[in-house]
Figure 1: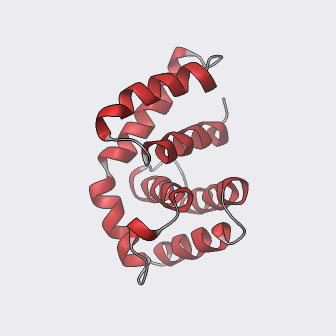
Figure 2: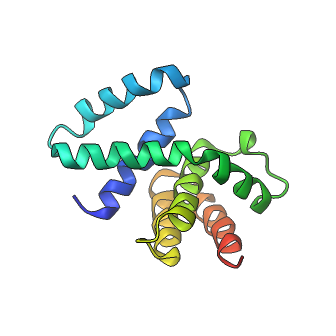
Figure 3: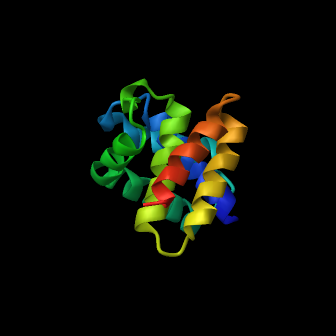
Length: 134
């Protein structure tokens, strides 16, 4: 599985977690793996599940960074696609030394084009470019 595919799976899991209570997340993840990743190896499943968990664990650091970068936008008002993509990208930019900042930004923009509305990719790119300057 490519890094892009892994990133997309983590994004989808983050997105779906926005619609469930914290107690429901483990069951939702099991269902996701059964329905959408049946052909994945146990290693790939563990890696994707681990990345998802690490992003969720770091929301205490990620969300304030996003709040500062998106002045005038409350995270609660932001679209779930954009919020999930931004959280993943900030995690990659700030917590994953293996992924260059430019790659994290580009991948988030590409996912925004695929999953978001017409203005999603511009919004995601603008927020992440602002963060990259700091």
